[in-house]
Image (tube, rainbow, N blue to C red; front, side, top):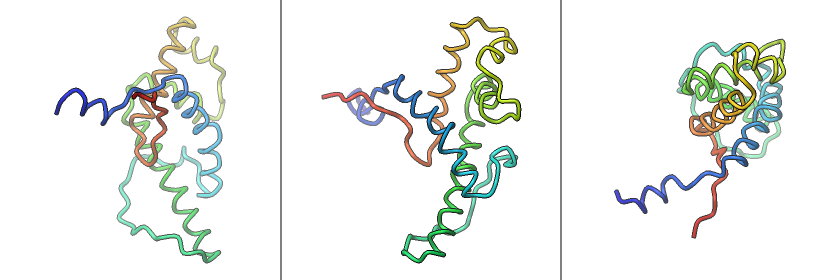
Length: 147
């Protein structure tokens, strides 16, 4: 596999926009999926692989409701799985920011981790980029257009 093949397979990522997309995912998509799934992501203990067959969308209202419920559960499971595949510091930051009852602010997490501001934001952004790499249900990356 040559260099051009690798570039096509793994195009250059727009880091800032990818970080913004992952933040949006955690701030808006996850709470919505928790409501659809009737389940908190913090209740999911460990990643599991579902052998449940995937139903196609037909149009029936009851089927659509069931499909949304099952899809929301899958999003939550895959999110837990992706977080588990991030580095320890990334898991810590993501879990503290989004999956604790306290919902600490950045400065509080900085103090807990004993990081100065620049170092903390470096690791925070890296955590979001690692999550985008590990989350495989949909692609959260924003790519730089190369021609």
